Amino acid sequence: MNREKNNGARLTLAELRSDILGIDTRVPLLDGSERPYVFLDNGASTPTFGRVLRCISSFLPWYSGVHRGTGFKSRLATEIFDRTHDVVARFVGADPANNMVVFTKNTTECVNKLSNRFGFAPGDLVIATGMEHHSNDLPWRKNAKVLHVGTQPDGEIDLKELRSAIREFKGRLRLVAVSGASNITGICPPVHDIAEWAHDAGAPIFVDAAQLAPHRPIDMLPDDDKRHIDFLALSAHKMYAPFGIGVLVGPTAFFEQGEPDMVGGGVVDVVTFDEVVWKHAPHKDAAGTPNVVGAIALAESLSILQSVGMETIADHEHSLLRYAYERLKRIDKVHLYGPTTDLGNKVGAIPFTVEGMHHALVAAILSAEGGIGVRNGFFCAQPYVKRLLGVTKEEEREAGCGTGDTDRTATPGMVRASLGCYSNEADIDWFLEVLGRIVRREYKGKYIQDPASGAFQPEGFRVDVERYFSFFEDAGQVKDRSYSEAS
Ligand SMILES: Cc1ncc(COP(=O)(O)O)c(C=O)c1O
Image (cartoon, rainbow, N blue to C red; front, side, top):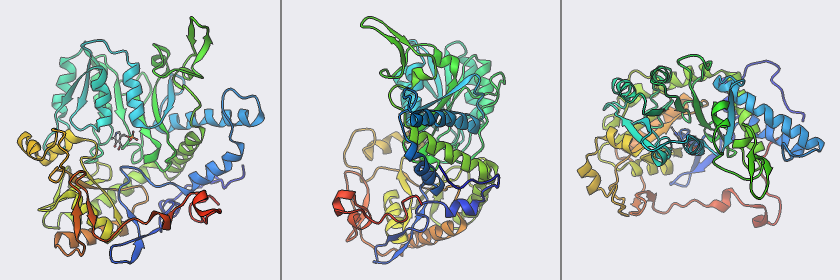
């Protein structure tokens, strides 16, 4: 496994940017030209660090099943895989003596697992907020009664209401579930304060860190600290390591209790036709063959982020946000949602709409005429987005939302530009340039809306997949994979 080592030197933000796979990739525009892609959809999934790809490339010759093999490669792979757990625990400040790291597919699976493992009794209450991603809402609704604490018109959680609800439901309250950062407005609630309120009421806290972990340092704090985070989840595909892995961190004692939610190989000590004896944690919650490569990719990515420093990343994103908002506020007819002045307490998500234009049209033009990747719609947080937009129940009905109506022509929504640690001012400049053209209606294409999805497609422009990618057998020979292959 000979690979570059950093020899203790810290990576710089510039080195991070140049290591992003595809940073210079040119994409076609509607007018037939090409330009380097500007990726502003990091809130959904980030691109990959080249170092992560090189790391797994150097591991793969040693790849082998873990925990149950006796061969050298299996023993080595097991040792490396086990160490990935420590890297994750360190990254989030979890005490490995009392806490464990469970690998899943993604944050959604983490929340479902936790909800299924919680052992809720009828009448048990989870307090969540009106800010949550559906993945930190629906899994709780499945197994418990959920109280959604309100948000203010500017997107902030009503913290007074949250605190008094936690106090009021002491006894019945089993868990407080809250985002570490909103995927819409980027707002970071004071999770350690909320943890203290929850603990005073005898309940643990779960923090959905899918959006927080890529942007800010996290410290779950010692277990005996009142402000300690009990459970936390994150997704590697939002952290420059998109190889199908997520992480749930929580107290080992919690996972020792109850039955695993998923059963099969790896979770049992004894099986007879009549009896099953579960393994101890952490194995009990790791059914089947684990995603060893995904875990290694995540651990490498977390080490890279720590080498740059999460404070450095947070400062960089904060100054980029300031740069973007100063300019955005000057563009007439662009409506911004969430904080626009106090930007220190939000991660790099910029939600907006353009007056008189459908959000999907704005997103389509940014892509076809600017080569800019953003996202539009509700971003899996329908209640929050509708509240920010001030959509009334009546308007929802008229637009067909909530009725299962298949005509989405008038479904409300927003556009979101979201930053990564490698984003820079040039990305923002180009985004604002194209947005300015859109606002002034200086775009060139004709865009046709598909009523079933609500999406707009530019006339005469299609994605020619074969030009950019093919599988081995399509070409009948090994293709040139120059930029995507680890060197
Ligand atoms: C705040 C938040 N929570 C949870 C999720 C779900 O993450 P995943 O799709 O990786 O399960 C997302 C994804 O966008 C998110 O932004």
